[in-house]
Amino acid sequence: MTSLWRRHRWWLTPTLLILPGAILFAVVILASSIQSLWISLHDWDGFGPMVWIGLGNYRELMGDPQFYVSLKNNVIWLVMFMLAPPIGLAIALLVNQKIKGMRLIKSMFFIPLVLASVAVGVVFTWVYTPEFGLLALIFRAFGANAPALLSDEHFVTFAIVVAALWSQIAFCMVLYLAGLNNLSEELIGAGRVDGARGWNMLRHIVLPQLTQVTFIAIAVTVVGALRSFDMISVMTRGGPFGSSSVLAYQMFEQSIFSYRFGYGAAIASVLFVIMAVFIAWYLTRIIRAEERGA
Image (cartoon, rainbow, N blue to C red; front, side, top):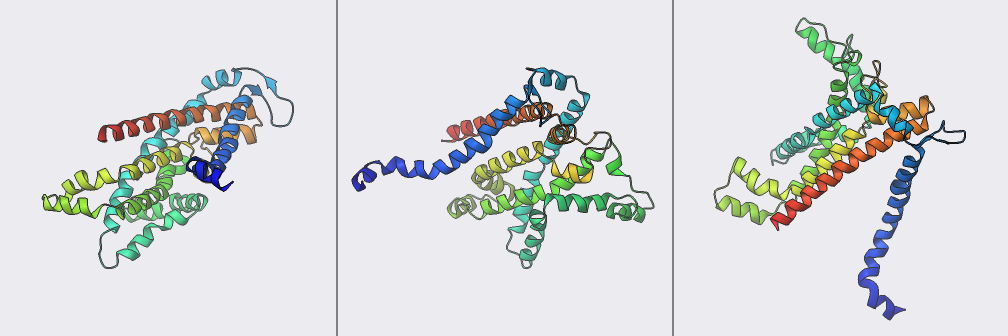
């Protein structure tokens, strides 16, 4: 037994380490995705028997105006959320400086990261309250009345995304702080010898070493933007009149409130395809960039 283990441990050890994660991924992700796709081909209220309707849910989805409103809001979330990695990097560079009192400032930037999304949503709902919120106090200081952002169909999505960005920027900052603490001192020293300072040091020495961190930050930010749900549920419940809904919230609303699990599964399948296409495209770009660098 011992000799058998010694002969095959070069592949048995990594296989045994990966196996629990692979089983969990297969059960939670793959099996759930296949089941969701299967349900999307049926008319099902979640209780009775499923009735096969083929692509009926998808045809209805293509003609549903609310689907396009949700899709547009997902694009807004995605575009605005892409501000989180560069802002997180800028803050990480700032708080990484060895200045007296910077530890206290750094700990303050961690606050939104440890708060639950629901708590952040409640706090920003108070901030946006036009009668007594922080926004109202600022507007009154200039002799103006604060707009009711969460009741305005044109601004409500932007207001929610700003609230969600608060914690997402903190998350990206933590990622970049970890990356900055693992920079090669030899490369930085060589850069200084060659006269690299400021922007040139950042662009040619620091940022290339943060490529993997940037990949994780962008991938997590995109997935976070596309699966946004909790902040919308807490702050507006998709209102007013569905103007702040996104695909994830529309899926929840159709499945739980309208008992249309087949239609909700069709929305989930579309969202899954959008995420999968982006991740595949982004991974391909990263791999090609690494191959060119090698």
